[in-house]
Image 1 (tube, rainbow over the protein chains, first blue to last red):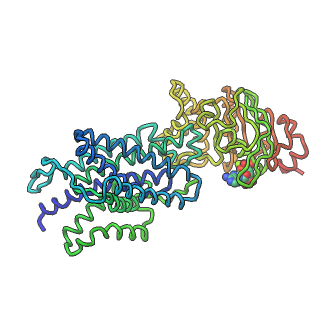
Image 2 (image 1 turned 30 degrees about the vertical axis):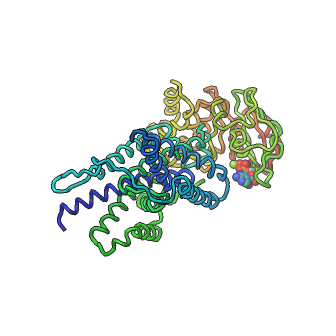
Amino acid sequence: MDLALFFQHLANGISLGSLYALIAIGYTMVYGILRLINFAHGDLLMMSAYIVFYGMLVFALPWWLSVVLAVLLTAALGMGIERAAYRPLRDSPRISVLISAIGVSFFLQNLGIVVFGGRAKAVYRPAWLAATIDIGGVSITTLALLIPGVTLILLLMLSHLVYRTKTGMAMRAVSRDYDTARLMGIDVDRIISFTFVTGSALAAVGGIMWALRYPQIHPMIGVMPGLKCFVAAVFGGIGNIPGAVLGGFLLGIGEIMLVAFIPNLAGYRDAFAFVILILTLLFRPTGLLGEKMAEKV
Amino acid sequence: MLSIADLHVHYGGIHALKGVSLEVPANKIITLIGTNGAGKSTTLRAVCGLVRPSAGAINFQGQDITRASTTGIVQMGITMVPEGRRVFPDLTVLENLYMGAHTRNDPGVKRDMDWVFSLFPRLKERKAQLAGTLSGGEQQMLAVGRALMANPTLLMMDEPSLGLAPMLVQEIFNIIKQIHSEGKTVLLIEQNARAALQLADYGYVLETGRIVLSGTGKELLARDEVRKAYLGEE
Ligand SMILES: Nc1ncnc2c1ncn2[C@@H]1O[C@H](COP(=O)(O)OP(=O)(O)O)[C@@H](O)[C@H]1O
Ligand SMILES: [Mg+2]
């Protein structure tokens, strides 16, 4: 195995990993604030991809406008899901909310089948995205560079939001202790809504880039990435944002390397994530960066 | 300033407050004492809007706040130092203090920060440290400082001396005196009944959800029932 080929795979892994990271953040943020695994999260990326598809092909909107619309509408959808399906159950046992989340996920998938049709649609991918660039013997597509680039910008924005703004501080306070956050005058419901908006917007961007990377969309495309990013979030330490990013990158790189270096196992590619999940739960249930399970008071 | 009338609170089937009435006049220190489970914390939580009363009324500066949101209540000038400190452990000391000023956007924030740092120089030394790494006493000071950052007119404190070493208990009581002398009204819950009654202008004794006695601090200290039940005298 020569070095150039290794870097080729690494670049590919980083590109996949950044998608996982973007999507995993949504799981971890929602878990942090509601102690809920939002199983509908993966389906948001499907919705976002379809919105861009329909925006461009059916309504003939320019690509950038379709992307903006997809991000806004998906964020609104994420917020709406919390309002309609999770908030009324805020004081119910956690299992009820979890079941509600699974219900929303099935609802979105079936809505997709009814509205968009069950057959896969080919995504138009501009030629410049597929063009390859040669960097020291490693040839990389523009897309494989674009994805980590966009991810990096979004991560910097997110980290500014969470660690440098008043709203971010309120998000961190709410994820610790609702009542004390309320005593500070924080409107807890508003912060929860905002958390869903943020996580969903990231998933929307992730969904669009996913559709460019695997240019075929159907109502189930959110399922596998959704599950894998859930694993990435648990692997990194659920509730911990840097953990989700780390988990996403490691999972993406690991998956690509597995396929590249042990081709015999290529068929088990999707199983890789779940092996990681089981190992995490067995040996380090708090994940790589998770602290000891903080008791929710 | 604060007036509670015939307040009832239920937790599911538990009738925690059974008609509590009390008055907190402006610029006074009022204390509420009582054994564990009497309903002291519940009373304060009801004032803050964290639990909803099933009956009764709470008035603050002439306005009915019985059903107001906690955010609204904080903005009107009531804050609470909750039982058990409840600082945000993974926020820094400075961030915790800014959390206290969450609803504010006035130039007074800076001045109040300076005031809090002058009351608690330790907090200034440790402002960049995560609150979870502070000692118990420091966390209590942070919880008090955080509440002051809201610039309250009424400061409610739920057992601020709980679990502190005797020297720190004394320090907390001195701080309460200082805060009061800066023009704040204080409603204080204490296990340490003697110190609380010595400090307070007026006190109420709560037993299983009812006010059973009230009087000036001096009067209550002299009552046999109080001496037996709360001061451990025979
Ligand atoms: N969240 C709750 N759920 C159910 N019962 C509660 C809750 N909080 C307090 N109680 C009950 O209400 C009563 C008063 O409690 P509390 O106000 O905490 O008393 P205190 O602060 O005087 O120790 C107690 O009987 C307690 O068990
Ligand atoms: Mg109490």
